[in-house]
Length: 322
Image (cartoon, rainbow, N blue to C red):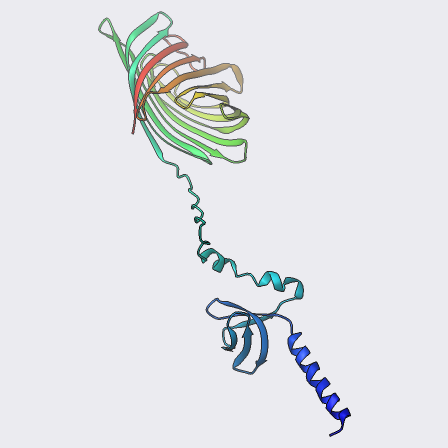
């Protein structure tokens, strides 16, 4: 054999070896979800002969496996283990595992209140009315549900001068960051107003105009459908417009002030309206015991009333949360 043939054969061997080392990196996904990185040595109809960077040469069945070629720019990034493997890896020595994120779950709030009210309506004044109220509510980041009911009863000179029952189901649902949908369905009975039954369904929007750590203010329009059965006067339905605003001020973790007002009117005659305002100063003595001072004002001009149109009430209550 001449030196020329020997050199030519040695050169062919070098070319073959260099080509084998220059093979692009491969990614082999196995049927069990594992991923191998390395080079494909050979293949046939049944098996891959694969050289893994971590396990060496392997004979892998083609069935259920997936082989892909990695571009040089992404080969190094692909060498990292897949996300499901990285999550399951044990933390390095001396490091504590990350604490799982705790997601707050909205809980139902149950409150029972009892106390006394001072009432002023025209020439009728009472300081002996008994007040009982119950509420169950649930508030979350996306809205609030509340079911409320109260009963006020009082006598003066052995005559009934206060007999009032209210119930409400209130919904607040967040539509956008500062816009909420509201719907209040209420029922009322009032002896002094000579109102046997009254149902109202108010629906509308409120826009949050101010919202920080201590103060929140929102206002918005709406519509209401009212059905009333007075003891005297017209019985039937009325379609009303509604403008509402709500203000809350948090002085302390246990002391807060809330104020809400609504203006309900007949669109065909703005002189027929009802103005209602409620202000409440609340305090929490313990985790379970609350106290509150509430003032309510109502001016009614939608339906003729025998006993007067204005109504002032002041409530002092003691409550229990459970």
